Length: 278
Image (cartoon, rainbow, N blue to C red; front, side):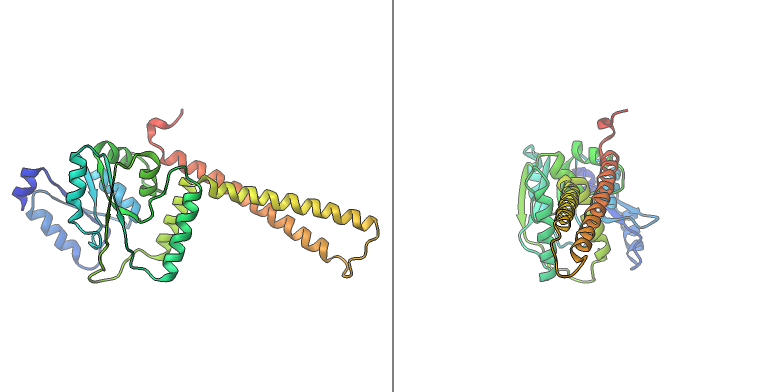
């Protein structure tokens, strides 16, 4: 196999994210035996997106293909990716036409894509997984970004033209369970919405202002009715409710401002260095 890798200029980079199932030795032996295989063992656990960025930094080829180790994304499709790249495509992505998830996961995924789509100018590809081919000019630019708070699929869709979309069917997992925990999915969703969806935080801030302003006007209206000696039946409850809405609106606005602030920091950190102003 090493002769094939060398002759065709292929390289297999194995990201070993602190494996504890004994696969580290297997991958290490494979890399020692095959010239075109690189075993990259992480000294500390990285997030899924961080591991992708690290793979980009390790790669040196004219293009790179991201393929997850569970092989639910069929490796046969890589050949179609390569054909599209040879024809001139710089970004080729696979879009899954089926998902193996329960109703709750599907619902949350639908809500996530809906919110993400509502705040972006480009159409979000539903089913776009971390299974794609990137030209060197693209993946090296992504590799130059900080290794934190990344949503690689979002960066690809936002900053580059997707030249080719190849539909495929995901396979069932043959064995084992995914280590992509709910907390990991939650962090990834927040990174996606805060970095790639301005309308998400902007909507929170606007709604907070609207609630506060409406509550203030309602309080003024109650003051006028009080001056006119209008009897509300239960003394003080309308005022308490209005004050409560005023506080909630103000609190929501303050929180959303913090989100806007942190979002701007994240954007600065995740932009390529040549886009920063000094």
